[in-house]
Amino acid sequence: MSSAAIIHGTIRATGERMFPLVMAVVTGEDGDLVLRLQRREPQALADLYDRFGGTVYRLILRMVRDSGIAEDLVQETFLRAWNRVSGFDSQRGAVGPWLVAIARNRALDYLRSHLRRGGNNVDLNETEQPAQFVDLPDGALTLDAARQVQRALENLSPQQRETIELAYFEGMSQTEIAEHMGQPLGTVKTWMRRAMLQMRETMDAGGARNS
Amino acid sequence: MTCEELKPDYLLYAMGTMSELESGEVRAHLARGCPACTEGVRKAQTLACSMGAALDGPEAPRELRARVLAIAGSPDGKRQAPAPVVPIRNWRRWMLAAACLALAAVPGLLWLRDSSEWRAKEAATTRQIAGDRDSIASLRDQVAKLKGAAVNAAAIFALDIERGADTTPKRIAIPPGTAAIVLALPSDLARQASSAEIRNASGQSIWTVSPLPASDADSTGLTISAGLLTPGRYTIVLLVQDRTVARFPFEVAR
Image (cartoon, rainbow over all chains, first blue to last red; front, side, top):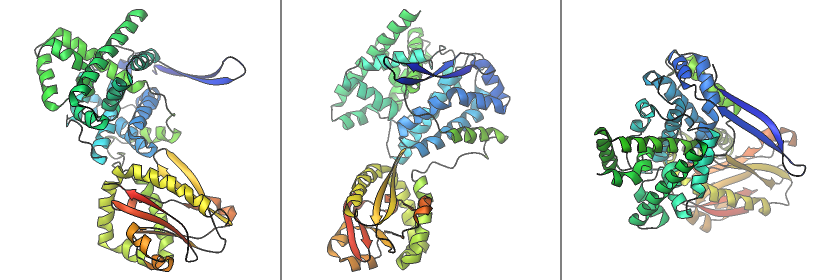
């Protein structure tokens, strides 16, 4: 059973302008989807794509900035998930976050190999092991979570935000970020640590308000 | 490493952007069963995932869904594996067509196309082109100048300089009944040589195009790519009837 729905419509703002409204509603019924993927049901792959394909595409496109390459990497992402889902815990695993991790790793792998970016040489496979996505809280991919992240990023100073974005979207190590920004490594480390603590506090505060 | 020392680095660890040494320390700490840090890393993983999902941007192309679903059509998925991502994929496709065009008019390209040296050069450049995107952007900007340089002529060509999702057609005007030649030459050569000499030079990239009927609008595209070029300074030269209509410099960065 698909656990996602997309609502298309329009919303009228002040005045006469109409704005498109596209809202994705995603619920947390990952277990059933994972089981069907493990049974190699083609429709399960379709459901997985319909739920997360847009998210995966936007993330990869943001990172590689080339639509043709992004499409190839999206296909690689789903192929990887399809071939590795047998090791996924259908009861406790969060398939969306896992897929996002695979997508990001595909893009990072591309950036490292084709743009000769050294990164930190961490084995990307390790960060997408299915076991890493056990018992993650539901809702990491919901609109509410997205809003919270955006709010947390907006609350950072420009330098802090840049360091986080360079690390996440460009896969840069702290040393590379320091070189990129022309700042001492210690300064960058301080910015990043403060940024991460501040983001965590903002997210926690948001979670507390929502609970 | 203590919990307090680790706490600011949860997200770095979750993003996989720590050094192997540092992440090894975190793993060792987590392996000792520290509940606070395990929970902290779990939250950081959620945050990292949300960062990836919190992006605005275009919808995925409709055809992509079919490509992805084709994976399930193969028992092990492997037969449907996408080709390795090559950053100049689109350029390759175009280049094939462009090479065919140039073949008819520029004998020098025969040598380039057939020789093993050309193949080796292509392979080397394929690796380099990924780092040359900024140069392509510069090229794109410069190509816009062609439009102004030949604005009084009659026939129209579209020049598409591709840079990721951003493909902007540029239109230049070419006199009807003539062939236009677009060359990418080392700047030193382009600076010193006359138009006739340039035309006869075996530059690294040469494209020859002829105006087509207006009704054949789909086949009038001409794409200039830095894909064949090794790093260095170049000049793009547009020749019409041995007359240099426009030239502009660009650099392919190392």
